Every structure is written in structure tokens, then in C-alpha cells.
Image (cartoon, rainbow, N blue to C red; front, side):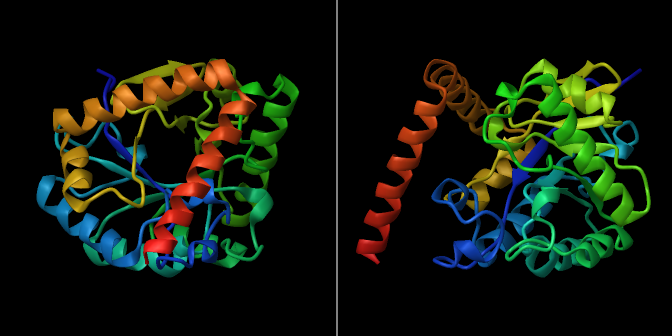
Length: 273
């Protein structure tokens, strides 16, 4: 019987405090998802104590226990995946899923082609995070979506020397059409940002949700999410549905207001420090 549930965590970059521009995208929007190295290590220790199975590859979906297992994912393709994350995962014997924005490969603060190959050589999963990272991917035309997925898959496949069958949706804007076009590009497993354990199929593609990790997420909360405890998961679900409604109503205006609020929060934090 095909598995109908899976629990996944969504990380981005691991960077030192004010050096958030050192890995991945430099914007204040992106900074809220970047975790400091000591906190990230604390997350991993707490998760190790909270789950009975080592985080493994999503391609072993039907071989791991249905309960108390978690998939670790890392979006954007920032250089910290190679410089900060992979060594710690290797020391624990865990598998990570690294989703690369192919239009940024080799640019400052992003992984190089060689670093991407090294992740695969070390047993981790590399997948697509689109080619240009549209902030509102669900609003792209069908042709734009096909180009985003196919270009990214082709580039990554050439780099790693193997088909790319896994991807994650950038920007948090998911739709059925996003999954349909990913499936046409050969993607078999697609992660979005919806905080859910439910798995559904679109075309030939399995769609999995993820619970998001931010710079303020404590090790205890990360462990609770990984273990599937209800309170932490429900809280993310409520917030997600509220944000989803605001996005539908506000569109680009929502993104502008959100960016302004984040800038004010960051400025206030810097003043206190």
C-alpha cells in the first residue's frame, strides 16, 4: 500500500548572525529563514533525540517507518549547504535534500557545480528549486512554469550525471499547475511549503508538505515538529492558512507589506544589539 503521510522540515541557509548575505539570497525576506550555526547544531541534536529513525532519502519513502521519521530539506542552493550543513549531516549518518536554484549556481553566496556534485557523491539528494526562483510561482503562465522546471532539471542533470526527480517549490506559492508542469519535466517528488504530513499525487508526481524553520525557531520546537507533536504542527497550520488567505487577497501588495515589516523588525533588533 502506498504511503499517504510523511513529515518533512524545510530549512534554508545556516549563517552567522548579521552575515545573512553570506549564503543564499540576500534579501530581508530570505534572512528570516536563515539559522545560526550553533542553533542549527542544537536543532540536529534535539531532532536526533526526538526521532527513532535517521532522516533518510525521500526515495526510501516506503521503506522507512510511517511514524517518527522525518525528511530534512534545504532550499535555495546557498553555499552554506556545502560549507555548514553537509558535514554535520554526515557526522550523524543522515541524508539531506538540497534544492538548487540553477540560475544562481556559481554566483556569490551560492554553491558551485563542483560543490553540488560533491553533495551527491556523499550520498545526499540534489533537486530543483526552479531556475530563477519566482516569488509567486503559482502566478506564472504554463509556458513559464515549463521553462522554469525543465531548464533547472536539464542543468542539474548535466551537473550530477543523473536524472533529477525531486524538487521544491520556491516562494511558498503552490498550485496544481505548478505540480503538473513539474511532473512533465520528470519530477517524481515535489515538496511545497504547506505545513502538512498528507501526501497527494498530481500526474506522476507525489506532492509533500513541509514544516518551516525560521531563525527564531528553538531546538525544542524543531524537535517537536520532527517528532510530529500536535501543538507545534497545529500552530504552523493556523498561521499558514492565514497567510494563504492574505496572499490570495493581496498578491504583490502582500509581498511589499511583508517586506516592509521584516525590514522594521530587523532594524529594531540591530538597534537593541
